[in-house]
Image (tube, rainbow, N blue to C red; front, top):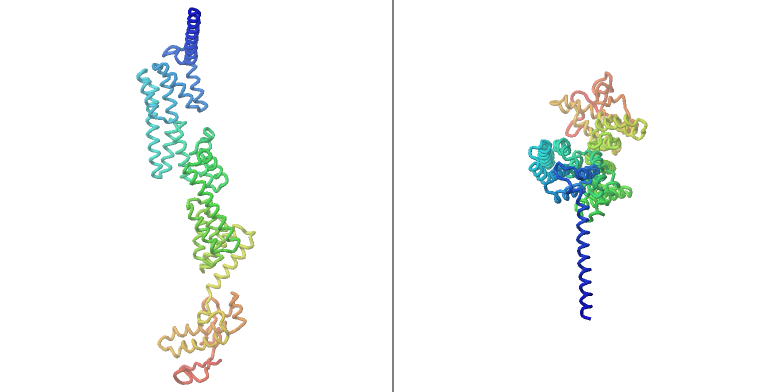
Length: 484
C-alpha cells in the first residue's frame, strides 16, 4: 500500500516537471520568434534588419513616430551593437525635436561608426534646429513675431518637420501677426494628425474668435474642455466669449427697449472685455456711436465713430454717423465732407442724401450773420422785444455818440440796423429762420447792399426817439434823426 502511494506521488511530480519544461520551451520559442527580426542581423549581416528598418520607415511616413521609436528601442535592447538602429532612432527623434535624446543616439552611432559624414551632418543640423527653436521662442516673448516666424519656418521645421512645439509656435505667431486664416489652416493640420491636441484646439478657436466667427470658436473650446474640463486657458477663452456675447446682447436689447443710457454703459462694458477683438469691436463702436448721436452727445459720438472707422475705413454707416456727430458739434465743413463721401459711395440711398443736404444747409447758415446774436435776443423773442433791443443798441452805437471810435460805431450801427431789418419783418424773419437767402440783405457779412448813412445802393434811415436821448437833448450833432 505504501509502495503504491509512493509511486503515485512520483508520477505526479514527474508530470509537474514535464509541464514546467514545456512552459519554459514555449516562452523561449515565443521570444525567439518575436525578437528574430531584431537580433538575426548585426552590422553587415542582412538577416531581417532590413525588414525592421522598412517597418520603421513606414511608421514615420504615416507619422506614427512612437511606434517607430518603440521598434528601434527594442532592437537596441536586443542587440546594443546594432549601429543602424541608433542612427534611425536619432533621425526620428530629431524630426520630432526631442533634441537631447537624438543627440545621444547620434553620438552612440558615431562611436560605433566613427566619422560617418551623413550622421555628422545631421548632428550639425540638429544643433542648428535646437538653437533656432530657442531663438524663435525668445523672439516670440519679445514680440518680434516676423523674425521668430522666420526662424521657425526656415530652420526648425526644415530639420525637424514633425516638431509639434515648433508647429504650435508657428500658429501662435500667425495669431499674433493677425493672420487668422493662416492660423486656422496650420492648426487644422495639427488637429488632423492629432485630433485631441488641446493647444491646437485652443489656438484654432481663438483664430475663429478674432474673425468674429463665434459659433465655430465656441465649438473648438467645448471639444477641448470635454477632453480636459480643468484646462485653464480653454476655460478662460470659453467663458470669456460667453460673457462677451451676453453683454453685447444686453446692450442691443436695452437699445431696442429705449433704455439708451443703460445701453451705452453695456456697449462700453462689452468693449472693455477685449480691446483686441477688432472684428467684433467695430460693431460695438458703431452701435455706441449711433446711441450717442441719438442722445445728442456729439463729442462722445465722434470718438466712437472714429474708433469704428479706424478699424474699417469703408464702414459706410460709421461715416454717416460721424457726419451726424459733427453736425452736433457744429463742425459744418467736416460734416459736409463725411456725408458727401457717404453719398458718393451709396448714391441710391436717399436717407444719406437728405442728411447730406441738411449738412450743406447748416454749413451755409453758419456762414451768415447771426442777427439774433447781434441784437442780443433769442430766437423766440417777440417783435416788441426785438424792437426794444434794437432801440437800445442803436442809441448805444450811434456814430454821433461815439466820436472817438466813430468807424467802429458805424460798423456796429450798420449791423444793428441790418439785423432789425430782417428780424423786425415777419416775412423776412421766417425766411431767415428757415435758412433761405434774403438777397437784399447780402447775407455773408453786410457788404455792398446796405448802408444806413448813405443813399447810394442802400436804404437811408431816419431815426427819431420821442423824448430825446437819456441824459440830455433831443438830438445829436450831425443831424441824425431816429424815427419809429
